[in-house]
Length: 308
Image 1: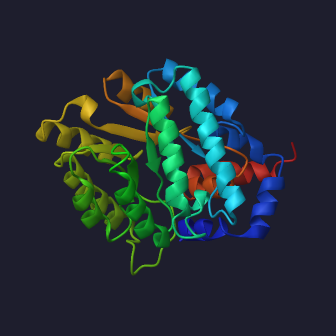
Image 2 (image 1 turned 90 degrees about the vertical axis):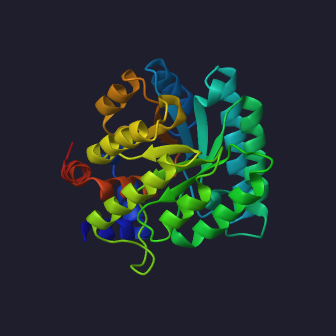
């Protein structure tokens, strides 16, 4: 119930203004967001790469309302990829980018998001790295997968995200588990209707395990985005059973969450990628992180109530 309330709050303009304007908010934001500029993103990427960690960068923002704004988001990604490449951080896909299709015009005119994503993919290819299309609300799933299908001929390493919380996801994993495909599997951080999504944590976990098995037994490159110790253990067991080498799949975690476990997995020889968001439009991302971890919420509320 608390999770649903928080996810609903992520769309509240009044609550957004209250939280964004609170001076104490900065401390918790800094725990999960690299900063507001591409230079901040490069700085954090450099630090993580020095620790042997892979990185994917998300320029925060979604539900773009006009084509000029969408073009500005594309320009930001192109410039970011140029900076990462110039710093030697993209070699072999070590640092890549994650893109929300709604941020580049998915809900504007037909074809706009595909055109813009193709521009980002071209810049990523020039930089020697890859792009992954992020998961969003349910109504964005089908058009996003359509874009992936249409662009993979030109950009075969274009990745996508599947949310285990959705009832359709096991079937989507089966259709995407082919040779060369890159699929990030996460639990899902958006509020969806019961008719299309699992609600109980146990149901979501079971769905994740089923999707995980499909991807690990397939011929693609699975990217397991989870902080759940049990699912991490299951991933390792499935890799052994399916004969996968450590460089044929990867773990992914969010910047600022379980850094000790991130280092442990990287030190064991596993591919460990950190999802690093940056930019000024961090409100929706922050609230979804609070919804996922009650301890984060308690810390945040204490901070808002303090007078310091």
